Amino acid sequence: MLRLAIVDDHPVARRGLAAILAEDADLEVVASVAAPAALPGLDGLDVVLCDLYLDGDRPAVAAVRELSRVTRVLVVSAASRPADVLACMAAGAAGYATKDMEEDALRAAVREVAAGGFHLSPQLAAIVGAAERSRPGGGTALTAREREALDWIARGMTHAQAARRMGVAPSTVDTYVKRIRARLRLGNKAELVWFARNLAEGDAGGRGGPTG
Amino acid sequence: MDAAARPADAPVPARPGEAAYPGEAAARVVRMEAWSLLATRSAALLNVAVALGTGAGGGQLFGPAVLLAAALAAESMLLAGWALRRGRPGPWAGWTDLAAGCAALAANAALVAGADVHTWGFFAYPYTLVGSCALGLLLPRAWQVAAGAVTLALAYGAADHLSSGQPLWNAVPNAASYLGIAPVVWVVARWLRRMAADLDASRAAALDLARRRAVAAERERQARMLHDRVLQTLETLGGGTWVADAWMRDQVRAEAAWLRWLVERGGAVPDGEVPDLASGLQALARDRARDGLRVAVRFPPPPHDDLSGVPDAVADALLGACREALTNVIKHAGTDRAVLWAAVEDGTVVVTVVDQGRGFDPAARPRGLGLSRSVEGRVADVGGTVRVDAAPGAGTCVELRVLLPEPARGAADLH
Image (tube, rainbow over all chains, first blue to last red; front, side):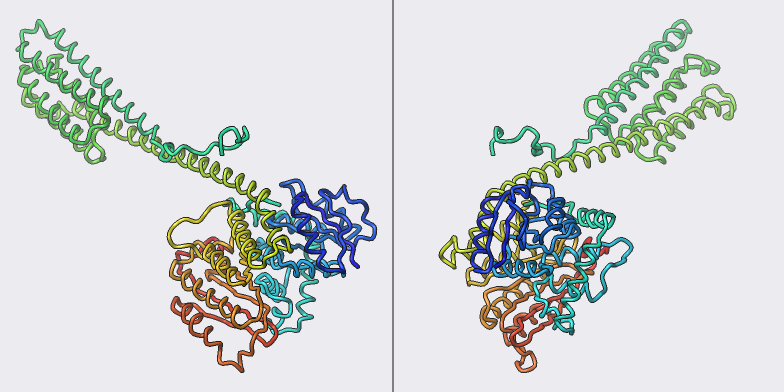
């Protein structure tokens, strides 16, 4: 039995997430609160599902960093600015899921994170891929094969599908994903600044949309 | 949304009347030119008045001189009055004024005798000299102004020579004065007009930017409200078992997905008869939801999500091909999920249709009939290619690629 907590300022979203998780008898939601401070205690929690924007507009990077010290955090958001997602990954989050994802995929993501893994959702793969492409000077932190894996996952492929397309073993793609995570964790502040700048500039036409 | 509900700091949408900046600086320059015309002509007529005053006892043909002066005054006031009331007159006014000046020089020379040409009696000279400012204001081209000034100089020289009987070179210093005035006025006026045009252009650009920002901010505010109050609830209802009927749940999901897409692009509803590729894919996903297929539509982060440069014919072909590929998923894949993904990379629009259904063995099966004809045919018609990856039990990926024509390649190519 995995013990989960939900942190989201939107009551309907909290209830919806809880209902999706409740369909799996192995998942138990022990707390569902609007802010991290309201969590009764982090002891024994396997995963905290944390909304990216807890107070409307600012990303909950600090909260993710605090929580990641003691437990595993799966960032869950509807819309988001790519740079905010990357900042949360650098702060130690173990994955990024979106509120409109399929229920079974969400439950799988939670189990993956609870097992100590990293959930590279298609959206996160797309964000990391875009950030890679926009690196100044054309340099890259990932190998060409890692970037290729990112591209296929962004298009909705499973690791196994991506592996077949790339002509490698599925375990090789798993390894790529681990390396990508390590790379994200190492991301220093300067890199996040250019992630943010490059993505924000591409975002200038008001496409950022609201956050939540 | 009524005014009372609008927060005090909310941007006020632009009024439609502000759409075109009127060119205020340019209008002020036209006004200033008209006043300059009036001022220089008044100064020129002052010379005439002084001449008539001092020449009154000179025993000349005083009556005709007064008549000539009156004609000059009438012409000047007509010109300045026109400019003040109706704006900058056309070049015709310049040529007319030039003709009047030459005629005045000839008439005045006929009225004064011999040495009197070099006295106040020849008032047409100072009058035309000061009045030639008008040529610089009224004639648009440099050569026209130069020709006008030279014509006046020649007319003066001829009048002086014929009337005084002195050698032609004697008139050169006075005649040369004409060459300095109109060209300088022309240069300064041209410079002012250009400055005014630049100023108007930058003001118009600033206004336009402010208006577009206001519109974008208002849209974003409304999108945020939709997001916070409607969308999250709709998305929650589309999941789980809140809605008992599976078909209805799919509708809710599909509408929520469309609303999310709308909200994330800043609330701008695409206009025009032909939907662009992005909205076409969204519409396709909603259509397929009615057949029980849940289609997630995804785009990469900017700038690779900019599909606006995809020509209509290519978008039509890709949408048709995607529709067929999704039909194949419904018929053969044995799954109710699929993912559509579209991006522009290196000047190529790439669309993939991925499912995790039962797949097929491309070697054993002679390319699904539907796939080869309806998908590959459509994409090949616009010069694109199709790649199908599939394996039994491991889903299918159909990838469509079309190279975009040069001018349509967008910002995505800068990387």
